[in-house]
Image (cartoon, rainbow, N blue to C red):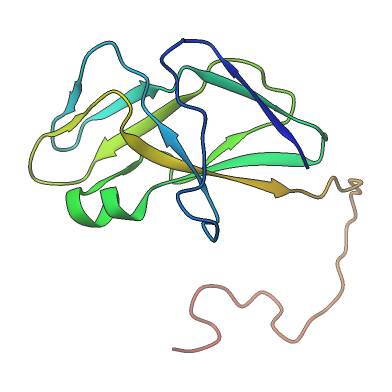
Length: 145
């Protein structure tokens, strides 16, 4: 699989893996000046990038960085971002500060991680019935603790 990035800002950082075994490619902030998130605040942080996967069955999933989440309470406002294979617009990362102190995002700071993922494109069918299963309609907690 090939993923082609386009810089929309000359200061943008192309996502890369921190180590050879890293699952995600680190995404960095592309800012003219630092941005401070107050506790409970959400802000859209620009990356200065857009990208194109070489196949329509690839979704670019954006996840939080565990260090920002566990040390500072800073995560993605939407939990996991999805960049569709046909989207060519600028990427922004919606960060939220769940912490108790203001957090400042600096230019070039690693703020999220990208994991390209192959997706299924199902044929949709509508029916009045579905097959029976052992679980049936058992929902949350129905299988015990």
